[in-house]
Image (cartoon, rainbow, N blue to C red):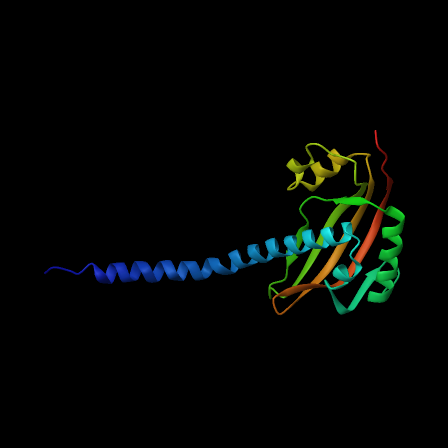
Length: 176
């Protein structure tokens, strides 16, 4: 009796589809992590451009910022003061650590960063984007070092910050 190849091909296809379904949540999480990192890149660009309204559009209505306990309006005032004080600056940072919740609707972000004058260069820093410790060692004593923690919530297809905690490291970093 001659057997048709169709049933085995059909089972192979079904197994492949089942395997794909198992992999999709992992890929989705990776996609969301990449999406959050892009969201952060856009926030950095808004901050470097002193765009208060753009930055606040990345927060939800009940947003809270620390230190202190600032709502969106208080955060706007603090940012305006910082923009005036620092004038032209760049924000440098390695890839942020992103912890996506199992439901895919909330996330926690932690990232060190430095504020530097716009004209200050750090050659070779790009190679440490995936290595926060190496990045910190490379930056060395060249700028003001900060640590930012964000809590994010996904509203529809958009990520919004529900809270932010900013702290200086206590290290005053100076140029060589």
